[in-house]
Image (cartoon, rainbow, N blue to C red):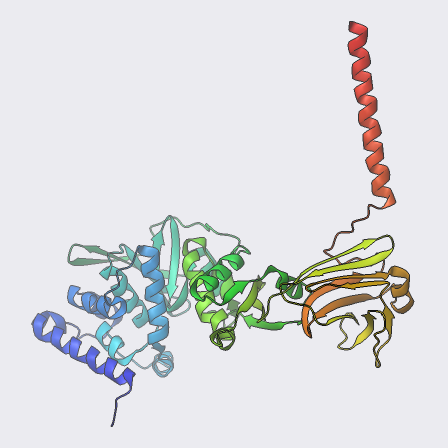
Length: 471
């Protein structure tokens, strides 16, 4: 049986809806028939009937929660459903006079250039009573964008998510030079839309989020959202060590944040355009569009997925395993390196391997008595106690120093039941992991502590002597 693809069905239904609206509204809905230039197409496209059609297409039955919600959803819909018309752009660039599409043509053809993107964006926002809205013509760049204000912050809407603070748009998308502009102020008053042409922006603009980066706090919120939406995903802080050390001990994914091409043909990471007003939508975007696209096959397998996410510079780093990691404590005590391991599962096999930082092959193994490695040097632990789900290991520092160069940095890896579970840096000067405290106070610390105690005793004695003299 022949079935039409879903996209064709949607286009047919949209065309029927438009034809029906023209039939109902009559002559008022055909005002764009004989106009071609931007200003006149803008006026006729913002007729209340066209605004209603655009709103119903973009939002459907959904009612935006507020202006922030409406702005993000509008850009998201346009980004996914309307493609840039490069053919038309190059024809206009070479001087050919081509009519600007009205909103109905944009929705049907699903193609647009900047002026047409601006028209459909404004119509969608007017539908949910966001007003005033500004269309800004960047005359030096032959480009058109939309500007809205919310909570004393001005945002540029330019065809794609995210909304961009005005100052950031000038800094990153225009390389700091706004140039000459022409502005249209658009207000909706009841059923009427008022369009006024201005010679500049009638609003004061400041940079309300000068940090221009995605904050670290979003890591935890993204992982929380993942665990809320997928019952088999669990945040695992122990995986952070692998990310921090840049060692792919587990499955490690690196996702470059999307780049935007600015009007000087330079790329800019979207991380520059983060703003806390849109935090919820950034979390949704990073979680569903970026992270889940990378790990979807892992999650959909149904196995428990332990995950840690870190946003660093312009990339998302994801460490992931399908098994729970044990508790591991490592410290130095009485010139011995001590490891204590506690797992939820029975421990049948334990391996300790040491790598020179940057090398793929181990340079040393640590084994329990009566065990050995054939292909690499190894030392036997002075103490190795196995319980059902616990292991206690001790090895002297002198043993390690016989094989490890004091001038090199080494990586200690722990494998339980043939799976990697722990990684740490061994600093050969101290033989202590970079983030692992020693249980033994060194001589200097002890001396300082005693000096403080003696000072306190002397001070208290002096105070009591003064009190006794007064009595």
